[in-house]
Amino acid sequence: MKSFLVAGDRSGSGKTSITLALSALLSAARTVQTFKVGMDYIDPSYLAGVTGRPCRNLDGYVMSPEEVRAVYAHGCRGADVAVVEGVRGLFEGAEALTDLGSTAAIAKQLDLPVVLVVNARSITRSAAAIVKGFQAFDPDVDIRGVILNNVTGTRHREKAVRAIEHYCGIPVVGVIPRTEEMELAMRHLGLVPYREGQEHGEFLTRIETVKRMIADHVDLDGLLALAREGEPPAEESSIYAAVEPDVRIGVALDEAFNFYYADLFDILSSCGAEAVPFSPVHDRLPEADGYVLGGGYPELFGAELEANIAMREGLREVSRNGVPIYAECGGLIYLTDRMVLAPGFAGSGEEETYELAGVFKGTTRMPARRMLGYVVGTSAAKSPVGEAAFRGHEFHYSSVDLAPETRFAYRLSRGSGIRDGFDGAVRDRTIGSYTHLHPVTSRGMLAHFVDCCRG
Image 1 (cartoon, rainbow, N blue to C red):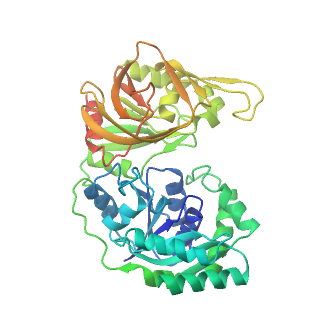
Image 2 (tube, helix red, strand yellow):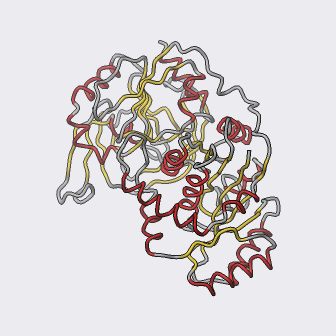
Image 3 (cartoon, helix red, strand yellow):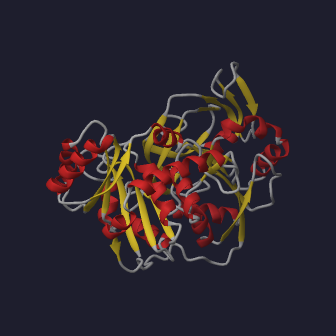
């Protein structure tokens, strides 16, 4: 198996579109397994869409090194090529003086060679200084090659390539020209997640544009020559070992709710749960021993969610009857009484209000101050997920105003939550939070939830 990591010199370098195109091109003749550094849902959905295999997340802030290796080994099963997409700049992380949570940390933990994407707009010889600085900053990171992006003209190309290869001693395996067509295609990727079975004509058109540009301007053979070659890593962890299911858990999965890490379904299986997908937009609530409502874009489907009265009433009823429900972000929003969208937010010139499931007494409002970042906290023993310390992340533009008497299961030491310092609203055996948890690093909490579903 060949493996490499694509990193950027900064956010906006073009790394995401380039990684996506490389993965699609390599998939034409090989089995490609992709990974994404960081807690992200949209990029992995695209990478899964072009390879046909679930993209898995690797996050050195949330996960231990052992968990990173376990996820990587599990994902690599049966793959010919492993491609890891970094996050932001190569050395960006959670702290100023360590590489915790950075792409560089993942590269070192997995011993992956790095191909550095450099935004070369308006620079030539200075591109070599950037690469040289990256090489010197942490010599334990194995930077083996460079792809230049936003290059204009033959002279620009020749000077930048010659300078990098002379001063840095590594090859430039790709030079992507700056064109309006390429910029437009890249700008519109990363806005809406890809989901198999939906119409994605515009997405596929943009992918074809980027693929064509990458195929014409990146040396794929040269790139693969830089990759590490060896046997796929052996699975040393038992966290993915499936057991005979004895409980059914409904998982909301449709155009409104689709923010899930690929490992969720493996970890549910390892806890003895069968995942039963259902659509809050289209379906009636299926019979199950518990339910999971992930994140997504409920604000884009307010009318459809309101119109499915049977689903809203069904969730309210099972919650009142003590059936466990676990909800994150978009799922939390759906469980409130109503969602209020400010004028212009959803394309209308007037305020829009949609009635929702009403499990939690309160109102969701959009937009609100953007909240983005890692959270650190503990959960209470008397909650559907049990007592645990956890790390996760939040990313939302909404505010949820719940009744003053609402109980909370999470106390946060870093992050905001529903109320500053508190998250994980609890009613009966339903829990809803802004915090997104990774199922591998929070497996104990998920296992406790599955136990609750057993009664």
